[in-house]
Each structure stands twice: as C-alpha cells, then as structure tokens.
Length: 304
Image (tube, rainbow, N blue to C red; front, side, top):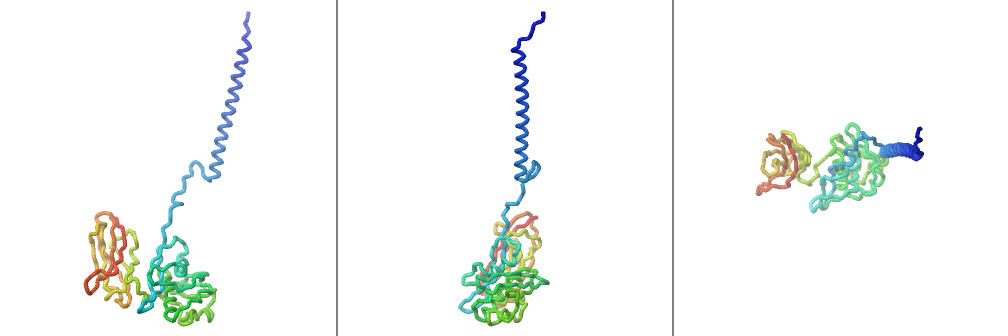
C-alpha cells in the first residue's frame, strides 16, 4: 500500500521555492538600482568609468612681469622711472599694462602717476607695428607743465613699446583726433604722433636686464641683454653657481654712457658639467673706488 507524503513536507517545499523566487527578484532589483544610481552619478558629473580626472585645470597661472614707466620729480630734474610689476595672467596684456599706468601703485620713492584714475581704455589696435590707443575723455584732465606732458606721453609710449610687436604709438580720444585731442594737455600736444620709443629721460634704474628673465633655463652661450645709464657705458656681467663661485665674467660697453642711456648685450661662454642653478649679476664699478654699483641679480638654471 502506497504511503502518502506528509502535507507538511509539500508545504515546506512550496515555501522554500517561494522565498527563493522572492530573493532572486529582490537581488535583481537591487543590482538594477545600483547600476541606475551609478549611471545617474556619472551623468551628473559628465564622467564615465573610463573618463580620467582633468589634469592642470586648477593649476595656478604664473603672474605676468610687465614693465611700466612713471614720472618722478627730484630736486634737480623731472624724469621717468622704469618699474617691473607683477600682474595676474591675462590675454589682454597691452590693456593690463596701461591700466597699471592708470591705477597701479608706483614702487619707486617719489614716482607718481600722471593719468587720471577716471581714464578708461576704450580700445587698442595694433597694425604694422603701430599701436593706436583709444582713451575716454578723462585722459585730457591731467594737470602738468610742458615737460610733464612730454614725459607723460613718453611714459605711455615706452610702456607699450616694451612689447616687441609695437614700434610706434598713436592716441585717440573717444575714437576721434579732433582739435581738443591734438592739444592733449595744453603744451606739447599730439601734433608729432605717432610717437616712438625714447629712453633718454629714463634715469632710474641705472641698469635693467631684459634677458635672461628670472628662473629661466639658460642656453649656451648665455645671452645677456639690457639697458644702462652708467659711467662711460661700462657694464660688467658675471655668472655664479649656487655656492657663489664665479664661473665666468665679461665686460661690455653700452651704446651710450651717462648722462645718456644705451643698450648693451653680451654672451657668456659656459660649458656646464652638471645641471644646476645660480645667478647672473650685472653692475658697473665706481671710477673712484672700484665698488660695485646698481647691481642687478637674476636667479637662473641650466642643464647639461
């Protein structure tokens, strides 16, 4: 006689199958939710699993070193001073340089700004070496004498011609060159524009160097270039290693001696045996006692 399976065992099997189905269903939904959440996160961040993180987007940009020219009055004379200012990185470097003439703070004791702080730069165009600056009407409000006007004009011209692509500079006021604009500040005027670079009245600093620049990796031979207003134009340049040992020393003569200002350039022959760093020093020596005067120090690097 066949024996019937107990009902309780059938019920147990049914419950087991039921729980297995429910468990599989829940597991499937959970996996789907995880994938969905992951897709949503990726969509919100615009990234996928193979997208690398951006590199260098948060890196700090190096500040710009821009030369500007201000006026200065001493007991003996009125003249220009050249200063190098650190400005935030920008694509509009010409406008930034002029803004520094208008709103910047001179570093040289006794130096001052001649342009009204209300002056606006409406535009700058450069074509075939000629920069044309369009100022607002406030540029005409400067209150200076005839020499101050000549130096004020030259301060703008010299600042812009620090950029190699500019050789001449002209001015407009609100897009016009009318009689009032030509009169400028009432003495010299704009009748001789376009104006060219002129360093005759730049008395300070006595020496400046335009090449190499700070922390530059130098080539061989090392090219040194700058401007000097020194006795007989005699300029001395030397290269020292990190310990202060003189590696090479050379002499040159600027194109003009004091009281004039002249350009100078020379090459220092050096065959470095190892990579390293050091400094370039440029100065002149007093004819009275041989002491070093107006020394410029530029940290540099080199590689083998």
